[in-house]
Every structure is written in C-alpha cells, then in structure tokens.
Length: 66
Image 1 (cartoon, rainbow, N blue to C red):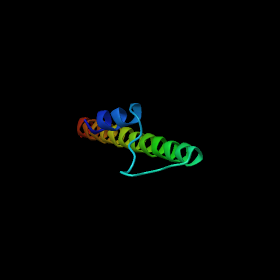
Image 2 (image 1 turned 180 degrees about the horizontal axis):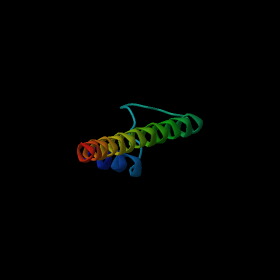
Image 3 (image 1 turned 180 degrees about the vertical axis):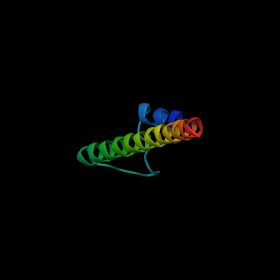
Image 4 (image 1 turned 30 degrees about the vertical axis):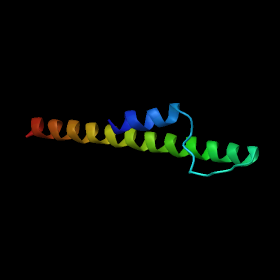
C-alpha cells in the first residue's frame, strides 16, 4: 500500500510548497530532487519487502532441517 502511494506521487506533478516561486533553473533542480527522493523511497520499500520474504523463506527452510 505504501509502495502504491509513493508510485502515485512519482507519476503526478511534483508537489510544491505554498507560495513557492521557483526560477526555471530552480524548478528543474527541485523536480529532479523530488523525483530522486521518491525513487529512492520506493527502492528502499522494495528492498524491505524482499528482505522480509527472504527471512520468511529462511525460517521455513530451517524448520524443515530440524
């Protein structure tokens, strides 16, 4: 669910602070940083999901060995 929310933020127009008045150059930097931050957040969530799956799989395999 969180991943879907972050993905939705990535695919919409960047949110800007109220009253923000960026120059075109500043807006490019803002938009790049906004997109990069959301991309990294999404990657971290995906990695956490994979780690959880791997730990669960490891526990199941360890139970089989005993």
